[in-house]
Image 1 (cartoon, rainbow, N blue to C red):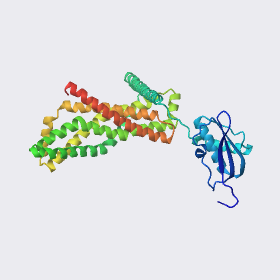
Image 2 (image 1 turned 45 degrees about the vertical axis):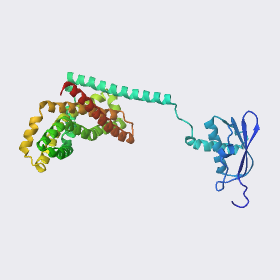
Image 3 (image 1 turned 120 degrees about the vertical axis):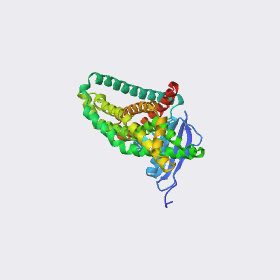
Image 4 (image 1 turned 60 degrees about the vertical axis):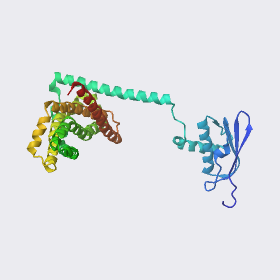
Length: 375
């Protein structure tokens, strides 16, 4: 301690009636020296009012203000009254500025009760579900108006979106589908070779790719590629107030922006699925020829014997629904985005997560329905 300085002290005394705790401060309060801790001075008391005094303080700086701020924060949390009537005007003014500057840092108990949290979560979920249902309903109505009056539809925008989500996605769909078919054939070959049933690799790969993996992998690829692009584009337009401008001119954002993207995905998704099916079977054929010594002709004939038109139609039905879910999710998240750069990123992320979740749920529902009808 520096020479000539008195140790800072704080003494709590129950001197006033009505639950008032008088706190007498004294000594020199310097930030470079130790100072008392309010919780230690308070002890186990629970006063209704705290009244600090600084009559015995010789020299002080912000260390004194920090201690008084601790007392004020404790009073705010515990519902006690902080009585600063005995403090000098200068200290009261500085303490008020200090409290205002740190208003966001005062630890206030904001935890809700269990029922309050459940109610808030329920209301939030209901609001989101209602917004989604309103969007789907508006899209269906716009689709009905399009069928009655197709001349007002922006076919050029739809063709551009078809190119972006269809033709431009062929390389990544080719790679993923080929690798999926190759991996499935490898895994099946390990087991089937033990029983001399190598040729049935074609059956397993063909059915799996056509009924499940073809539409599923194409949908997941488009969810990450096209769904995120839809959400980012619409969110950026919302941030730039372009959608507000359309609404001001009386142009429906759903019909002008959503329908071209939705129809483009609905058309291209089955085509990409057929392409993914063929490439996946080609990957299995490569494993059959290179590892199992199955001629490509025999592999193809075996695939034709097990895969019929009903299996192909099953995958195409899934693909159409998957494409609609991806388009709706991407456009909905884009229209709901915040008007900021961060909102654009969050909208794209939310669109991908929502699309993949809906794809998995829809695939599970299709599996149950097809099993019930014997498809």
